[in-house]
Length: 414
Ligand code: ADP
Ligand code: ASP
Ligand code: MG
Image (cartoon, rainbow, N blue to C red):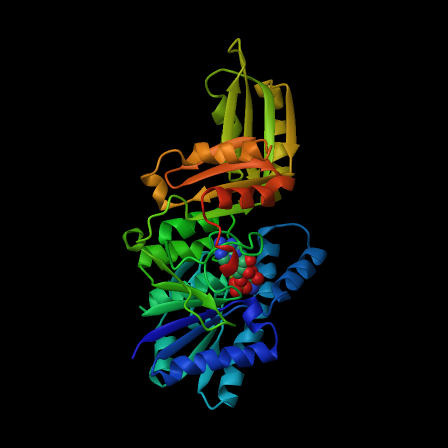
């Protein structure tokens, strides 16, 4: 007998008919003799609706309003956990729902982006041992003050993987509306190919660079606790993508995936005095304000007296970042400040980069051929990212996907 965690995303539980279908996938594991814990998302679109109602009432992000935000947005998962447990009962399968606080799934107090600190397993184990299915509301937990917390958008993935880690499950299956992890978002690149296996590091980097198929934290958790994760389809019964250790990725490829994100904004400061301590003066206050600076580039003028500093911040933090940078103008004496939201970051990712040279050069050549201007570049051991004008994002992704030989043959295109 194995212990399986099954996580179902929003489109998988979008209406009653789909919840009934999901119940048959749970039934299949139960009939195979397995102990089953299910983590569910809210029905598709529900969380967005809840978020917009909160924002209508309270546009400010204060700690107190964030706690109420969590109380509201966590409710979507409460509904689906109850509906799925009830559907299973109607089918003659013993099941009960669990909210985060009932488990308890304990988090820190960072409302709207809380981190899981501990998961008590007694209640869940007792449910499994009594032959019942535990249907857990994903995305939510409880903080030390007994207040409901949520784990950030897409957080039900993290609930699923965290439950699998805490319960030492044999497998964590992430059921979604695609049948696996692809070389690029299949909604953007029709010739994207499904990967049989992907390394933890690769999907971590892909998720960080815009592939929202898994929440970043769920991958971190899977990596740290060695949870065998499979991403597979709720609607088509075919093997999905296994997330595995790097050594297990047999297929040797230069690039594994191409991603893009429109979540960044660019700030350029011109005429910054080229003296020691300037970077600290700019990036110190941004860090103190919890604004994540991602890409940075600095150009020194010919006479060496001044520099232009360009960097990216999350688009949602742009206004705060701008006013912070403006506030240091009197002390820093730079010339001007430009901000641009119409940017996209396109990345090529793969552990193959550790052993192949020339990946970045190929990327720049491909973009040049399409006349796409590169604004900022950043690299890591297994990734090259470029910032470009937003309008070219999809063109760039498709061109790079072809250039690295990732396109599926015409006839088997996804
Ligand atoms: P769920 O509601 O099941 O959590 P999500 O919408 O969060 O589903 O994630 C699945 C979506 O991720 C897919 O519909 C797909 O458009 C998108 N996606 C982005 N990049 C990739 C990728 N490289 N491979 C597969 N799906 C991807
Ligand atoms: N319902 C939450 C969201 O839409 C969590 C999730 O679906 O994973 O972000
Ligand atoms: Mg998701």
